Image 1 (cartoon, rainbow, N blue to C red):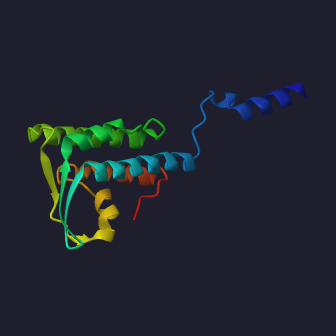
Image 2: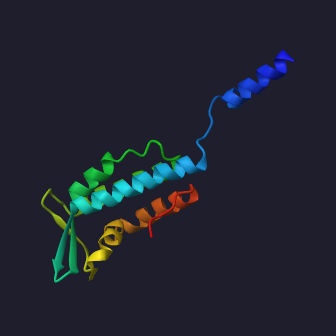
Image 3: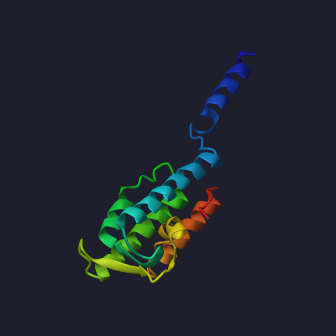
Length: 152
């Protein structure tokens, strides 16, 4: 009887599985969702948005500031597939900026996007240059596969 109780207690504590219990999918999804919100915030604080008569006319991004903001986002609580995709995404931005010989004052033209002021949050979620978009797509795929909900 003591062996049964001990076995049940050890299993409940995770010792029968090598002591490593993966977080529930909901926690993984929440961790990724938090990263996505921080990425959106980074886009807002690093963007230069031209507005004319309540219309968004042009969006430019301080690329180096954006990259530094992305690199500060903690992804350690996210599952490995997302962390790997995130590292690739940051590397794509670093390579893009290196290729452009960007400095701290360089502005990337991200979009000739035009829209209503109410579309600003959606715009900042999608601030991607053509040469970083494939890596961002990998982040989105990993996020979905890990149970995260992408913003609309």
